[in-house]
Image 1: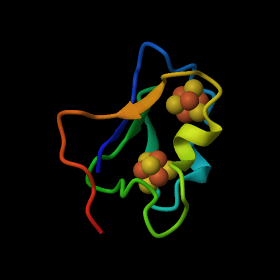
Image 2: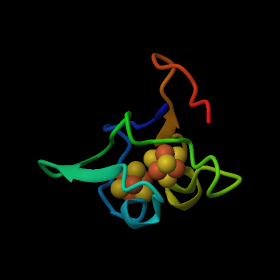
Image 3: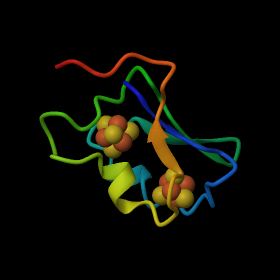
Length: 72
Ligand code: SF4
Ligand code: SF4
């Protein structure tokens, strides 16, 4: 569930979009977003969140504290 893209930090480089194993990242009106109901924190696919790993901007993809952590 809980990763989100901080819109003010995102440069819309699209690097993260194709790395998500759940197709949870997409472009909406020129801004990249993570669909909370599709994000599983990469559990079962990778040891680390791939969107965080590939994003070139520090603190651009972060845990969304408003949502509960994903439980497999
Ligand atoms: S943490 Fe993994 S599943 Fe969630 S949006 Fe990022 S790449 Fe996709
Ligand atoms: S990799 Fe980072 S900067 Fe690039 S689109 Fe994704 S969130 Fe935005």
